[in-house]
Image (cartoon, rainbow, N blue to C red; front, side):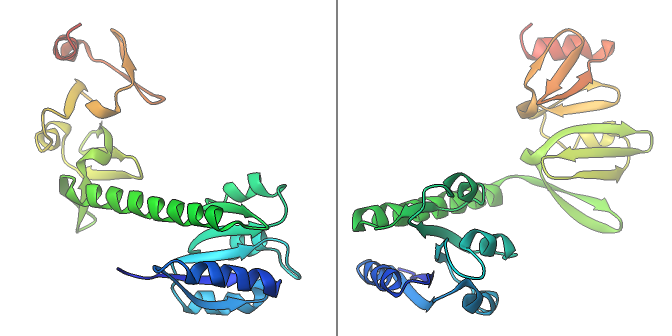
Length: 233
């Protein structure tokens, strides 16, 4: 079983000793290094890739929250503190957990379970994404991979088609009809001479328009019958 590498940052030696002890009681955890201040840990964090950081909040020079905000690619973080008032701000930073001192061992274990669950969810999502069907499009003389389930709708721009996805918008040379043929018919439907939509993105519709989570598109008269038949209206 792969070890979970950890750093501990706390200006109180007894707190470091306690977390070190707790980590030693969990086989999968490995404390790589400990630091008495965030400043001491800054360079080491940029040089070393770790899985999990136990980070105190109230420390001299720079507190834990400000330190966390300064990191470009922070590891997973469990905050440890004697103060409740930072909790709301802390969770906005996408931390794993917020542990109040003194930290009982059972509460520590719950934090580790949360870390593992979050890691498993992320792995499952990545695996699902890797299995998702995709299409390559020629964009700027490069073949650009587009995951089909990420696409929300297609928009005709005369001799080009704009492909709207969850994360980006791409412009591909060609007409909507020929590009639409590349997509699975069970996942996409043409609604207008200028638009085709991903069925999974459809939130609501009426006789005239569709709503794709806040984006409203018209239903063309020549496409209305097929669209309504598709949804049994």
